Amino acid sequence: MQKIISLVFGMFACALLRANEKDSLAKSITWQTGVVQLQGGIAQLAIPQGFKYLDAEQSHRIYTQVWGHPPQPDMVGMVFPGNDSPFADSSYAFVISYKAMGHVMDEDADQLNFDDVMKNLQHQEEKDNAKRRQMGFPDVHVVGWAQKPFYDKNKKVLHWAKEVKLGGMAAHTLNYAVCILGRKGILSMDVIGTMNQLGAVKESIASVLQMAAFSKGYRHHDFNPQTDEVANWTLSGLVTGKAPLHTSLFPSRFSNLFVLILVLAGVATAKLFNYKQKAAV
Image 1 (cartoon, helix red, strand yellow):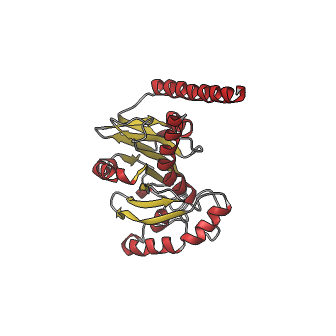
Image 2: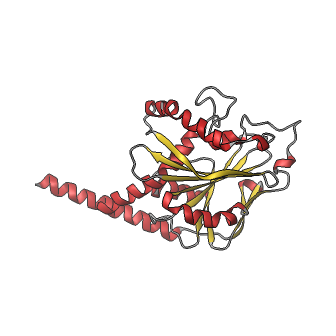
Image 3: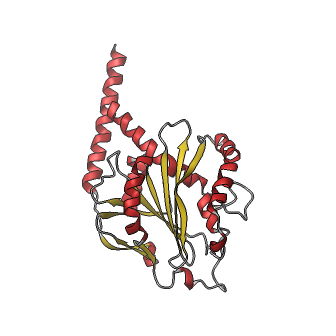
């Protein structure tokens, strides 16, 4: 009986500690609006009306301490809808990251067939899932496009959305990604959310697509072939998460983005699960 009482007391104490930490973090958050400089000034965000920005340090705390996910070193901030809270299970956010992966060429833009990209992605699924299982990750099944990819060649912006099923989870998750091509890398904005939030994301995507821009000297057309490195990536590779010039699944830091895709696919479902677990305690 004494052990049971001690266990219950310990669970209550842990829940109280988590609640206090959450309350303290919530009170310390400082939101930004207007124009925000990123990554030492190489890019900026013009936060649209109805949205708010959380800087890199605070975003990492939310991402790891509140949502319970491993650190993402490339993350430079998050953008939330104005009325949403990172502590609410119904919230979604655009995770902003800068990946210094080199200059992504877009000469193949006019030849892209994204129906074929999806077929190839699904064809490789079982092989990739076998690797995931070996590493202790659940299977990932891409159900299809939630938003078919579109590339704006003038603005150098690629965006798409996948409907994803993670492991045995009943709820499907949303992976909505926006990539802005720059001189030496890409600025990405990835939505963490569930499929039932797709409508809200689509309503805001027009504003979001106008939000980010590289600064002069760092834009895609500022590329210097004499000094700048060309990335081992194509536009279709960004969508599938695989650099076609590599044969190994994990040959380098940016040779495969499936871990990022896996994390993004699972964040929303895991976040909801974590909140339910906390509520149960």
